Image 1: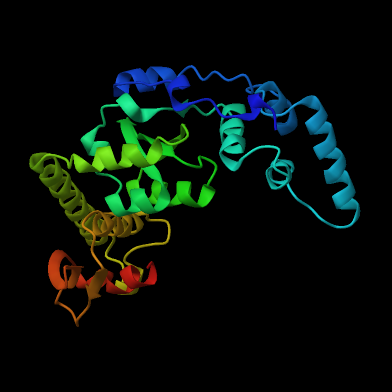
Image 2: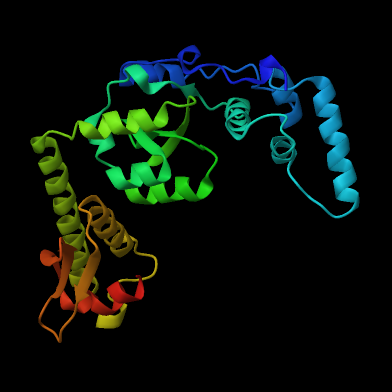
Length: 285
């Protein structure tokens, strides 16, 4: 491996300090690998491998496929020691137009940080940096992890803009962001807003069914996404509050459906829903 194969130190990457600076940076992605026709060309343009190494890797890949072995080119080069996994991720991110950032000087948005629980951030190696309209910019170890992107999208109810963390910067950034817990008033406002949103959705359901006068089992049609949004809201809030369980308790009408969260071993009442929604609610879980 040549000297050029070493990833640049973290200080060589952009270091935005504020959300405004970060957003401006994201509007102008730049990369020596961006615009390459294929991954091999991107790796050469980035100086991670030489043309000779690329030719050798392509030949090895061709020989492997003749005997039924199918490995992606990048993974093959990692396995052969031509480059490291972090180097491969950084080149792919640049090739696809993603930014690589050093968050060492960044001033975190506490409301954005609060959208992903601390234990999730540590477990998945992710860190929300800022919000912009319905977008959430998230620093990640692997911005191509589709499963994780889908999970974050579902958890936060935001469109995710992934940004790759410069080598060695993500874990310290997570520790720094979460050691400054959001001010009590910010956390309380977020909890109150989420609870109000759930109540509003439940009220929307009741209003719609009052107008339709449909039978109980058909009170929410498959095309009506209000109930799905309510369920998403319940799950999101349960995650935010670190609830271990969501209890949906039904009884014979006219008693309402009770939704309770188990917090620190105790069941805490969260929401009540009209009894006529009990079948539709359970069917969509």
